[in-house]
Length: 368
Image (cartoon, rainbow, N blue to C red):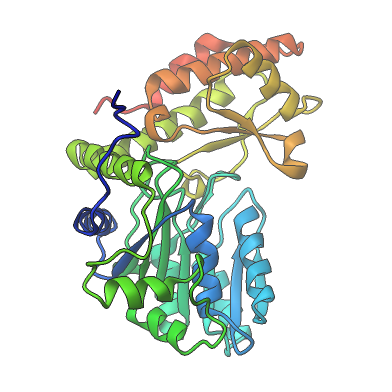
């Protein structure tokens, strides 16, 4: 008996390359794009280990937990790391990056997260990219959460290593990811004696054995189901139009930011300025005396499938995340999350006005 998922013909090198090309078009890049056979942490770590070593001086921007992780990897590679940390309820500015680079002129590597889904902020990469380009450092960007929710333009921004994943705003699989690599980044890796080789982390393996060979022979058997799912999700974005998909995410964020305070129970946007709020997810600060993780648990007990989560670590006490990305960037999903939070707050003894929240969310969602 045949099975549609198990009895598939092998994925050809030509099909694999065609999916890479479609991802490159989604990113509006002429750089090499490598699809990695694992979750986005694979190219995120591989790119750092490929480019950083004992001679590297890095400026690592921290606006959430992933920035902290990148600093750990850079130090593990032997790099000298200068952290630029800002409060998680805001975004870093280009001027802050400029000042940090002026304080450490030897910096030759800058790492930044575009949008932090975990904290709900997004950083102004257009302006930051111009500053990094002027300084001459290699620019590494985590765009895993932002791709599909807001513009990701590595060529226009001067990004040398741009990592994306399909599992958030793209509405695709978690098991594959991609990275665009500039010629400068390839040269840095080739000159780095510590860059991984013959390793699952190695981008150079893909360069030398896949790209330089004309993309005719794959390094190993691809994750076929995930690759086909990635192809399908890119097709879906192409059919809808990337601008339409991004507009849907912006609308979901605007509706959530408007609806939550209108509940009247003390919920407020965690990211204070709307210009610093990521369209992929909205974070909310709970009212005094209400534990975020307990509130989320109460909401999910009634509606387990809702895209709600408490903040990680210490933020579990005060922050709720509404993950309105991919299929959940919809009016229905936002309305259901607000209704569930209203019910959970009422069960905690907090007075709410769900009708007012619904009206505010509806008014904040553009008709188009």
